[in-house]
Image 1 (cartoon, chains in turn blue, red):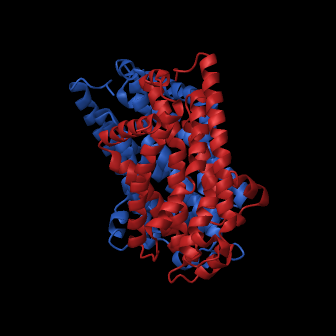
Image 2 (cartoon, one colour):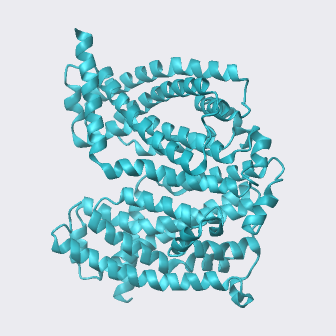
Image 3 (cartoon, helix red, strand yellow):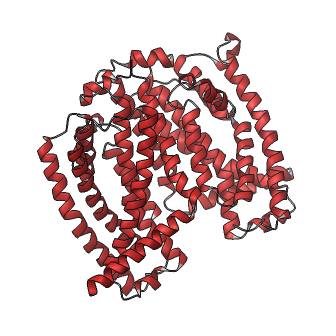
Length: 276
Length: 280
């Protein structure tokens, strides 16, 4: 019975978030169009170094000369990272500003259910926006993803999403704690953007930065995804990368949620939960 | 001191102080520009191949094999101009939200002094932050660029009129739309796509090339690249090659300044007559 009640709480939170998302069609449209337009110059830039659609320079680094598919795979993955890592925390911040967070928190539903409902809604909207972007890239730039190892790509994506949500829980906790999320969002965006290699393999980074990059699970996620869909060379043996990603997928959500609960308790006991 | 200068410098000073008030300013001044440009520069190294073997392919399309310098100049000017274009509108939005806009508008000073004050504060910030970023990146990636204070001033100064005009148009749009954030992101993405920031405009389809010419950005980038990468001299425009972009920039400047003043007045009058002047 209790499970049923929690399931209803999850569904209600999810439905509420979806209603808000589709309430602003212009904002929804810009979530698809703006990143799409932002990533297209990267593809045209790749074309500047290519002859007959084949980039020999890229092939020397990763073993594949299809620059458009290389860029698009990274871009779509980065869209997932942007939406999930920071999305949950920023939507909590919106509730703080609107004054509804404390009301939701005082209901009998578990915090986990409220967070999970928000997470599911977020996953649905992210899949919709990223899917539309992928469709655009496939139609306009001949993005070749169907010929790859789709089961491996799906497994990688699933493990990456679980890892990302774990990291997203931590960020959400930090938002509740520090109130001002934008500085931290910006720092983490800069660091992850530079180090995880969504646009380039990390072998083009200076050697002293590469160990930092290798410490991030997202580096293996994007590397595996490219290997699965495009057949690029991987940084480590494929099975090792899969094990590392699987390990982080098992660890991140549990640790992330524990940290979220700890930070949330801290902001409740200090009486600052609804402040911003 | 004439009242115009006093008003503009007072607004600029107040604005500059509030920029420095928040401790995260180094992050927004330096973090984002550096991160964005470094990503493109690393992509340049990737596409050029391990020993730069594909730079000749790049040169056949861009007219130079100095791909890193080519990319750096385009991106720094892109950041400089988009930042300048949006700053006035964003400041207006801030004043609307804080509730000080109606008071400022009712002051005896000309509204364009206020807007010029915003633009001046941002011009100083942009020049300092992006100038330092430019030098750091050129040094970090081992680029060889010969730049004198005179050419640097001309490269930044020449697009000034057009940029301020563009900024007035978007300032007006903020008074009309109220929330201009989504619009700002869309226009920035379009400018990155159409202005030849990391590739020549000639790489675009003909229709898009014509649209690109209505913004000052492709002209400004063409002048800067001609001067700094290809080795032309804008002070001796008689050489001919830099004359078209310099002329394009001048025409663009006059057009956007006039259009900006007319459109800002129109949007402000419209907002007043509909009673939505101070709302957000």
